[in-house]
Image (cartoon, rainbow, N blue to C red):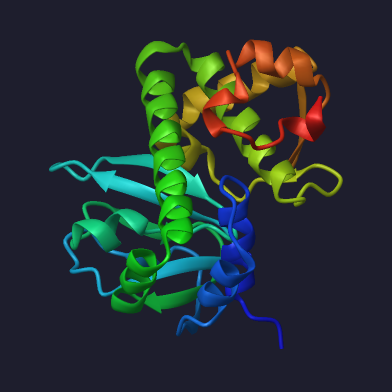
Length: 243
C-alpha cells in the first residue's frame, strides 16, 4: 500500500533538500484519510488547529468572507500540498478552506508534526520554504486584484493554474477547470458576467479555447503577456510545459 504522505515528501522536496532520514520520519507520522465531497469545509475560520491536512487528490481553495457575506477566494491548492500550515503555527484558523472538487485529505495530528519539525531542522526548513512560497503567491494575488485590469486578471489566473497543473504533471489534453465563472470572479474581484466577457476576449484573440470545464492554451507567450504573468513568484515550478 502506498503511503499517502509520500506526496507530502515530494512536495516539500520541490523547494528544499530532505535527507533520506527526514523523508522516512515524515512517512512515519500518524495520519487519517478522509474523503470529502465538493464544497465541503476542510477548515473553518475560528477553529482551533489540532491537525494539519495534506491534500491527496482533488483541488481546494481558501476563502475569506466579509461581514456582508461577500467572498474573496485567496488561493487554490493542489494535491501534495499542506493546506493549513499557518494554522499549525498560529493555533487558530483565520480563513476557510473548502473543497473545489471531491477531495481526499490525509489528516496529521498537530503535536507530532510540530515535534518532528523541532527535532529535524531539515524538515523545519522545508516547511518554512513552503509557507514562504504560499505568502509569495498571496502577494501576487493581491497585486492581481488591486492593480490589474479585468482581462489581465483572468489571463493571469489561467496562467498560474496551468503552471501549477504542469508542475504536478496533471495536464492531459487541456486543463480541467472545475470552477464556475462566479468562483473565478471571487478570485479576481470581478462579477461572473465580467469574467465571461474576459474569457470571450481571450478566446477571440486565439489565446485559449474552452470546452465545457476544460481550457486549452493556444498561444503560451501571448497568454503570459496578456496576463502580465511571470512565474518567478512560484519559486521554481515549471511554467506551462517549460516554454
